[in-house]
Amino acid sequence: MELVRALRGEVVMSGELERVAHALSSGKVPDMWLVKSFPSLKPLGAYVKELVERTAFFSSWLQEGPPAVYWISGFFFTQVGRRQPLGPKAPSSVPPAFHALTLFPCGALPLSCRRS
Image (cartoon, rainbow, N blue to C red):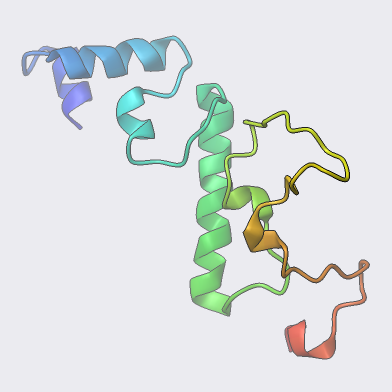
């Protein structure tokens, strides 16, 4: 890794590497990572933990097929919310993708949704 080589003095540390090193030493996720990653406001430790969880979640799809139950916050940036007026005259604050969802009580999934 280029950062390790720069810290050893083997190569000149660029401004970009310096920003990465500063973010890591401050316990923050480097902006350079967030450009290629899921959005997150979490500190570095919690971000890495979630990255491992997300990787395991999506890897299980490759090995076992799509799950019967989805980890919704694995797809969306759940730390950001909007205040929206709710009431009979206000439009629904539920994103259109969720209008077609069918919710089932725990343990009540139809047989077609269960893994064999």
